[in-house]
Length: 110
Image (cartoon, rainbow, N blue to C red; front, side, top):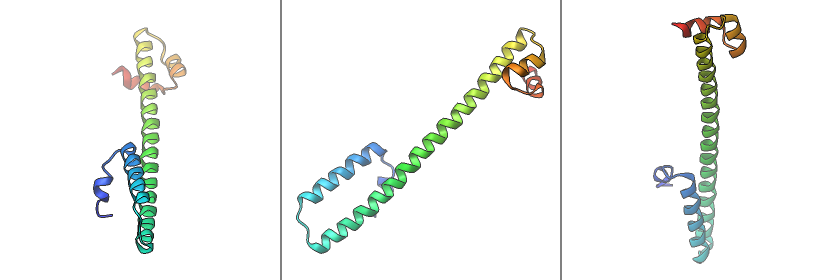
C-alpha cells in the first residue's frame, strides 16, 4: 500500500503486467501460513483497488467520448447552418434542416 501513489500513475496495461508478475513471483516462493494470509489479503485489496481504478478510467473514457461526440455534432450543425446562410437560405428552413433555433442561427450570422 505504501507504493500506491506510484502504482496509480501507471497505465492500465502496465498494471496488468505488474500484477501478473507479482502473482507469478508469489506462487513460486513458499510462504508460511501467516505470510500467505497477509499476501492473499493484500492481493485482494490491490485487485479491488485496481478494479475500481480500471472502472473509473473506462467510465471517464466513455463520458469523454460521449461529450466529444455531442460537441462535434453541435459544431457540425452550426457549420452546416453557416453554409446555408451563405447560400441565402431562409432562417426557418435552416432551423428545420439543422434543428437549431432561429435565435441560435441569428447569433451565427453575427
